[in-house]
Image 1 (tube, rainbow, N blue to C red):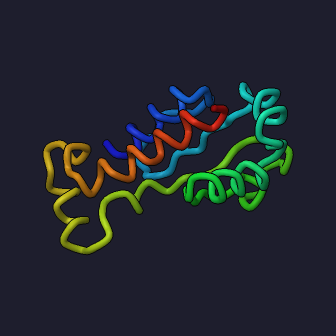
Image 2 (cartoon, rainbow, N blue to C red):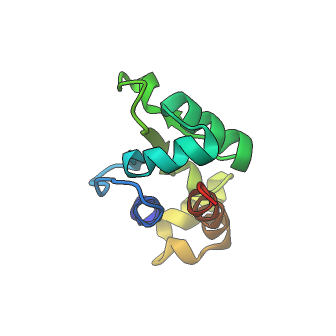
Length: 122
């Protein structure tokens, strides 16, 4: 559920992204925004995309180049398992919840990610 929400956020921000299937990773491709990212943010490759998200929004992602992807690609890997909570108790609550997206400790970081990705060009 959480990975699907991150997928939805990435697609809404303009990325191409395969839906997560049986895993907690999302691997968006911001190629459709290449020209705008380069012009407005000086983002031209996966290292500069990852650095921009960290510096501007405090969002940590793993640049695709660190996974053997072409460095020039505008892709990163995001592990959504870190969004279930900071403590073992919160994580268990997230796993047990009928709707983990309604839990404040899950919703807060998702809202921050959404704000960050929707503001990537703004």
